[in-house]
Structures are given as structure tokens and as C-alpha cells.
Length: 574
Image (cartoon, rainbow, N blue to C red; front, side):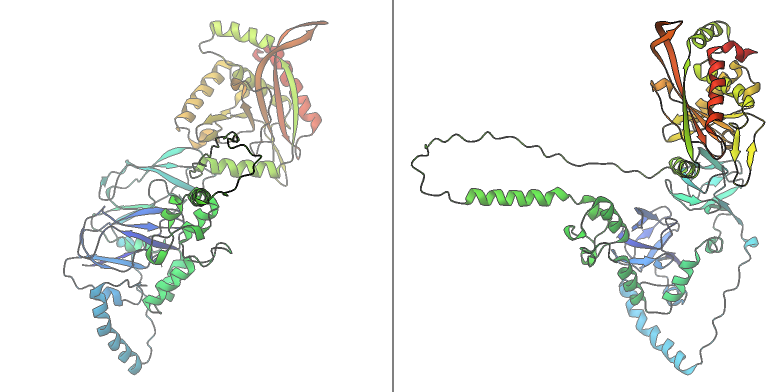
């Protein structure tokens, strides 16, 4: 039986797509997984694959034309199969592109429809009967909420393809969240019937990402409820107007003005977006699509310098061709020395762009909220680390694991926080929470950004236990294996850049914490001890405080306690 192929929704913001190129023509054999066409969306140009086997019976959209999401773009079925009834279905917004067979059939159907309309009163449109989804032998797999702050996930990698058999404990995909890359397990057994977002694309939490079920199952009813209402409205309205008018309207909308200079230039939405970002005037770009329409490829391949170089070359050739004056001033020697030629260098402007990762989005959102919501103030103090260095050397001679200076700082903070509960608190709008437990977040740098695993009940743990836990979390962070529960519940945070030789810096509070400690490197500098200038090892720490909870004197008192702990590290062991 012939099946309708509709314009897919390839991104969460897509409302229409442009058929940039067809890879198949009417009459071609098509297999599941074959790339049928390239579709240009508001974000990218992507391959559109077929999920059916058969013959391409009909193409409904010409290359370069824009149609709304869910509009009919093609029909696949058995060779020679009659598909005309699918074109006449009122619910399908068809954009006729000029398939010869469909043009011949149209005049036959139209008069019959007109006659029936003139002789018969308009009948109420019957609503489609609701399909009992419980009877469909397939299960929808949705994007899970893998962390408390996750709003969407990016499909990092699909581990299966449509048609593969999957088991209930198989990992269907690796999903990149705002905190880590994690596996999504389908918990269903059967055939993978449908894949929604492609690798690198995002899907909102609870959005359909896959369907698993019995091979050959019609999954259309399962996908229909997930389509946005706007698309349904567009489909209903387009069914009441001629197909040609629908296509024209779509093109007119996509060719809307972007600037005063190029408002009448025909260009796709994505091409306009890229041109605006790159500062390119579309008047200077030559379109390669039908009717000179500018698409993404044209903007990306446009070289702004080419025009300037051509003009310069043209002008220089004119100057060469211009005859010199025949007369020369008698006083001017025939062999006048020329001014030295200074070679000029014109470089090529280059840049690389990549999508913002989920982790970077989360960092941007959370830290912006923190900095612009919580009134920050900063207190800096210098700490003499001579005794800490000596104590670390002695401890590492007998300790089962190597203790770092960061372990010392973490333990000292844990002890000091018990003495200064205001620093270990959170501002919750209409109340302040004073945490009696001490959970310290440790900022760990990874390639994509920053993760903050939490050392829980740090005040009750030994230096060795803290050291083991920090190293374990750092390894997990680098390998993207941290679990959400290992990054939740911090009451205070430490950000240490000492290993990079940083002299001093400030950090943005990791809300809902009230404070964060920025730890710098240990510097060997001259210090005054007992009235004499001697070599010393000094480390600067800066406490960022939320002024809604912590006052300056409170922050300074905490640093004094921290300083005393690190300058006399034996107190950490009591």
C-alpha cells in the first residue's frame, strides 16, 4: 500500500523546510535508510532518510521550494500503484510540483468535486475516530529527565538504527545533558521502529526520541499527538486553499526582509540567519536554487574579499593602460628614483563556530542567574603555607594515599564551616536555610566546561578519605561518568586554580550556596617574620559572598578561622 511522506520536524523550532536537493526521482527504487533528499531547516541542511521500501511514485515539492512541517512531499509504494486518492485527501496540504502523472489526473477529479459541492449542501466534517493506542504493539521511548536541572538532552550517539532488534537492557543512545553524557535504556524488547532526533540534535525532556515494538507496526498514531498544535492548524488551513497558493505563501514568508538593503532578495530563513551573523549583504550573494533563491550553501561559499580584489585588479589595470604625459619637465632628471615599494599583506579572516553544548548552556544559565541575582562581595586573605607544606611532606611519608594541598584546604573549610554556620547557608527567598551538615562541592574542569562533584559530610572525613573521594570524582568527571546524585546537595564550593600558577582570582557563587572559595597558587615571596625578611610560601584565598546572607565581618571571620587551620595544620587532626 502506498504511503505518504511528509515534511519532518527536524528541530524543535522548525516550522517549514526547503527541499534543497532531491537524491531520488519518480520511478526510482527506494530502500529503508536511503537518503531521499536534503532538507534545509532554520538551523542546518540535513539528509532526509526513507523509512520505507518501495518505488518513488510521486514528488510533491520542487527543489528550492519551502513547505510547512507535515506537508506532503512524496509518496512511496509499489510500482504502478494508484496513489491519486492520497493526493485528494482533504487533510493533506499538498504542494504540487509538477509530476506529469498528477497533472493529468487533477482535471478529472476537480469537476466531480465541483458538481458534488454545487448540488449537495455542505456536510459537517466528521472528526477522525480516535485510535486505541493501547492496541498498538509498540512503546514510545521519551527523553528522560537525567538531572534535576535538565530541560533538554542532545543525542550524542545512537547505538542502534531503525530495524535493529533491541533488548530491554540495551543502551539505545548516549545523551548529553547539562551535566554529563549518560546512557538511555529503552527497557523494551522488540524492533527499533523509529528514531526521532538525529545525532547532535536536541530533544526536550519527555519528547519522543524513539519507538520500539513489533516489526511492521504502523506507528503514525503514536507520533501524531506529539506534533505541535501550530502544525495542525497550518495543515487544516492549507487544505482549504489550492496547493499552488500554499507553496507560494510558504515561499513568500521565507523570503521576508532581513535588512533594508536586501529585503527583496529571495533567500531561505537559514541563509538569512547565517548572512546576518556573518555580516554579509545578500545583494552580493548569487543564489543557486530555483529562480536565483539564496540558500545556506551560497552564503557559506560566498567570499566577501573577492569583490574588493576584483575591483582593485580592475582599477590597477586601468591605471596601467592610461598613457603617461608626453612632455616632461626639463628640470626633472630622466632617471628619477622611485619610492621604495612596501609589500602589503592581506590576511584571510577565519573563524570556527560550533553549537553550544548542553553543559555550557547550563553553566551560562546558572552563573548568569547567580551573578545578576545574588549581590556578590569579595574578601581576600593571604595564608602562610610553610607549616602546611611541612605537614603534607610528613603525612605523605606514611599515608596510604598522597594528600594534596587541595585536600588540606577542603578539610580546613569543612571544620571552619561548622564554626561559621552563616557561610554554610542558602538564601531561599523568604527564608534563609542554615545547613547543619557540610557538603563541599569541588569544581573540576573538563573539556566542555565545569562539573562540581560533592564531598558529602566532609567535616567527618579524614584527609585520606577526602583525597580518595576527590581523585575518584575527578576521574569520573574527565570520563563523563559522574551521576546526577554525585553532583547535588552542596552547601559550599571550592574552586582551586593553584595548579595553574594563578596569583589571585574571584569565583561566581554556585547557587544556592551562599559562598564559594577561590584558591590560588602557593607563591614563594619575601615575608617578614620576627622582624626579619625571610623567604615564605604564601597562598591567597578569596571568598565570594552572597550579601543577602553573609556580611563582610562574617566572611572575614570565616577566613580567619580557615587561615588558623592551615597555618597550624595539626588542628585539622584534633
